[in-house]
Image (cartoon, rainbow, N blue to C red; front, side, top):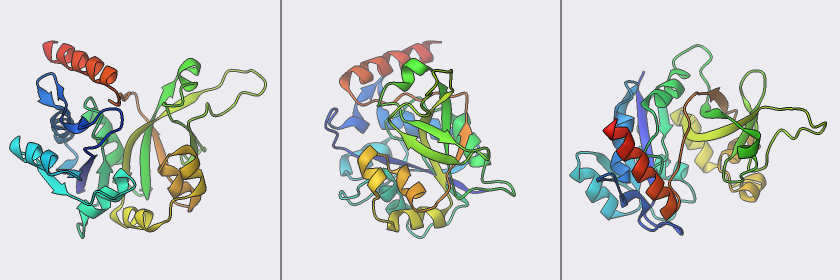
Length: 243
């Protein structure tokens, strides 16, 4: 099976300008993400899809592959579709460019879903979440059916325990995988009402009848969105390397 991993990396960020190139434990953040993805045995190719030549230069400088794309894409998925072009791997994996501690095993887990008779059109990951964490709108929650297909994604704590009973929450981890056909179909669709309301691009798929398989993983994710996040990530990476 041929799995190609794409990492969308936009230079401008309201809270952290130049985010892909900030230094974390001696390397630009985008390098940590690329090197982590390369460690996944299932991945044949790792490509950074970016809107800025400075990111292209840095990636190529450490021996990575980068594609310069339009600065006008509304989402990372649209950027990946342009970078893919006419390429035709068995599965395209979208790894977030601001999560430098993404586990290679998590990438392998989602790729493996596409190597069987019940292969999905699109897939993502989730991790169990505590009730206290579920109240955080920055942590996107997902609920799924008995076949592990997503029913809904929300910033609200779903499902809501009306009777006050305990419930299980799942944190959506932003690694996506698609067949090339589904990826191209997705980016041709207009943005949906729910997508614009929650600011969650995966809702575009559900609003248009594209099923999303959800795989529960033991791996957690931690994104870098603020200077405080960057300081914490720098410390975590240094501690991991020292260990």
